[in-house]
Amino acid sequence: MNTMKQIGTLLKFQAAVSPFVWVIPFALCTPLLFMLHDEPSLNLLILTQNLFMVLLLGALVLAPEIFTTASNSQAGGLGSEFILTRAVDRKLLARAKAIFFYLIALVAPIALILYALMRQEPSLHAAIDSKAGRLDCLQHIAGSTLLKGRDGRADLVAIPSGNVLVATWRSWEFLVLAILVQVFVYAIHPLRYRRYCFWALILLVSLAPAFGTLSSYRGSIPWDEHFFFCYAANQSYFWIPAIAALFLGQAWCERRFARLEQ
Image (cartoon, rainbow, N blue to C red; front, side):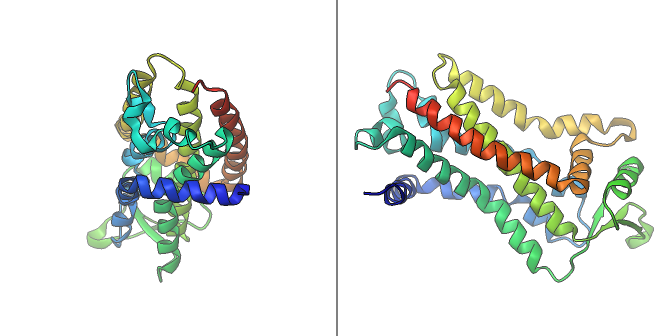
């Protein structure tokens, strides 16, 4: 059996043995709910609160044995050891797991891009709470303008093709996090306290929105909003390193997985 057929077989096996992971993309589509509003809050559109789901997905798909103690058998059909007993090459298995992981993790942001492209109104009218944030938006995003909202609101900004911009931002964000999760999972895999390291990272990512709220104290610009504006102004500088990191990270992870003890 050639490489592509083996990967295809492994993908089918993972999809069949772990159908519950397909529920996760629905939890990652939160921004779609806010996009349905005519004048959504930009802070809600770029919300990072549900990114911890990507971490959980990464552990469940790439190395479910992280959640076990003495025996990997608790991971069942999802565990690497179970599949390796079927005489599968370790590097090939790591590649198939990565493909399945990225497929599930990127379903939601790709759906957001398709939804944004199908919307009749290409411009996004979003509310930005702070005056400093509105000025930052006008400075970084070409063509953005201030609007007079309903009931005399003065916090609205029109962003050209803003819906697509938000969707691609979420795609970049999910892709980068997925790369970091994969590298992190294989880096901590041999460690004795790998579970505690993993849950510490989940806690850190879960608290990211709180850090953004604290940074906006006294009218300053939340760090996630400023980062989004920088992305809008320099998208190529964000995507090129991300794609390079994807291939380099995948090569490292495959070698790392091949050297892990069985």
